[in-house]
Image (cartoon, rainbow, N blue to C red; front, top):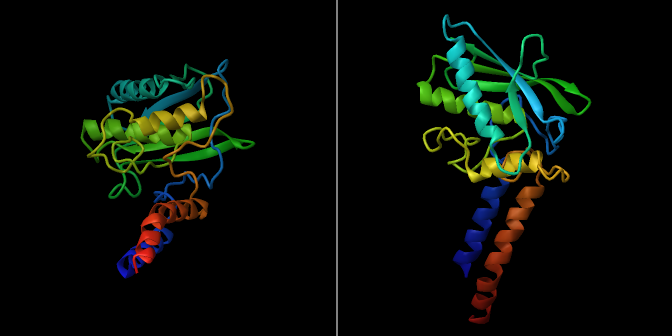
Length: 230
């Protein structure tokens, strides 16, 4: 019985010592609020463009971003459509590939929401260090950062493209990623919901209490049995 109580106490202290979802300190901070582009089924397009300081790499990088955008566009249940901006068209997501970026020793890319139209994003900028990863790693970084500009936080599921674990995921989406984007941009035009599995409640202790109460609920029956056996 003593060991059981010690286990519950240890788990409780561990949970309350964590940030809600171990959010990576990028400028994408959702603070528990819904973050999404003001788009509808009838107006689903979010435009993107590519710039680079690497000579001769423009078309290769545009092709890479187009492949990543297509993956997000093909999510069942989501109407969101990432499209390359045409000449003179307003760009929503600006993606810049640089040979070196500030903090490139620890990060191969980051996303920043630079402008809002009220509460909705109007411009998002992605910076990618093209010299810090092989092509596979670069592709996954692009897909990951596009996810941030869509409005997703980090996932705790290692196989998710929105996790930190580039060695465990692929250039594709896991169920966690698809669930999140389909809840933000539901094709049935239902009310958008905060995506599950993503770091959208940074600094909010509500989820910690939820996990604690769930553990208590699961462990209460064996505790009662142990007391009755004394």
